[in-house]
Length: 297
Image 1 (cartoon, rainbow, N blue to C red):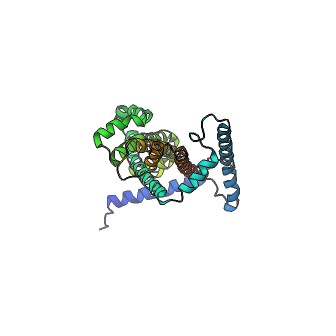
Image 2: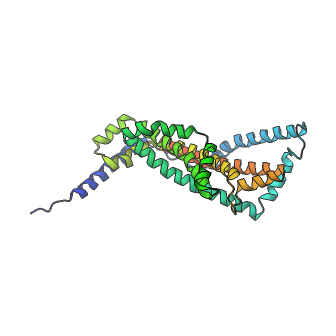
Image 3: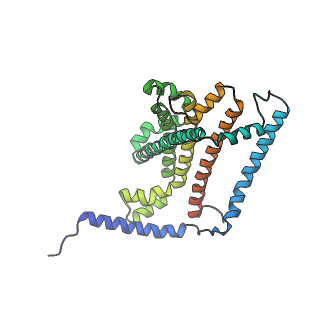
C-alpha cells in the first residue's frame, strides 16, 4: 500500500513552490545592480547640497550676531558655540548623556514598530477592526505628543516608563498607518497573480503583500522615528528622571545656568543625530527603490 503524504507536508511544499514562482517573477521587475565604482561620486552628489545649506545657515547666524539683535551672552556667534561644542564632545559626561538618550530612543522606537506593525496588519486584514479603530489611529497620529505627558506622569510618575509611554504612543500610529497604506495600495493584479500561483494565507502575506508594501512601510517607519524623536526630546525636558543625565537633562541644566552657548550646542547635537538617522532611512529607501527598478538610472 502506498504511504500517504501528510497534508502539512503537501501544504509546505505548495507554499515553497509558489514562493519560488513569485521569486522568479520578481527577478523580472528588479532593477540592475549598480556598480560600486562611482560610490564616491554618489556620496558627493548627496553631500554637497547639505554642506551648502549648513554654510548658508551659519552665515545667516553670523550676520544676526553682527547685527547685535541680542547681546552675545544671549545669542553667541558660531565660533563661540562650535568651540564650546568641540570641548563638550571630548568629555565622558557628554557621551554618557548621548548613550542614555539613544537607548531610550531605540527602545521606544523598537516597541513602537512592534506594536504599530501588529496593529497595522490586523486593521488591514479585518474590515470590522478597520471600521472600529481606523480613524482613531489617524487621530492619534495627528495629536501633539506633549499632550500625553500629564497623563503619563499621572500613570507612571516621574520615571522612564512615562517617557517610553509617550514615545511609543507618538510613533506607533505612524508605523501602523504606513503599513496599512502599503497593503491598501498593493496592485489588485498582483493579488490575482498570487492566487493563480497558489499563494494563500501566511505565504501570501510573506511573499507578496508585505514585500509589495515595503516602500510605504519604510516611509511610515521614517515618520514614526520623527515622532518618537520629538516626543523623546520633549520628555527629557519635562520628565527629569533622577540619575539619568540625558541630553535633554543636560540642556535643561545649561538653560538654568544661562549658558546659551551650551544650549545651542545641545540643539546642534540633537539636530545632527536626527539628520544621521534620516540619512539611514533615505539610504534604505533608495536602495529598496533601486532594487525594484523604481528609480532612474
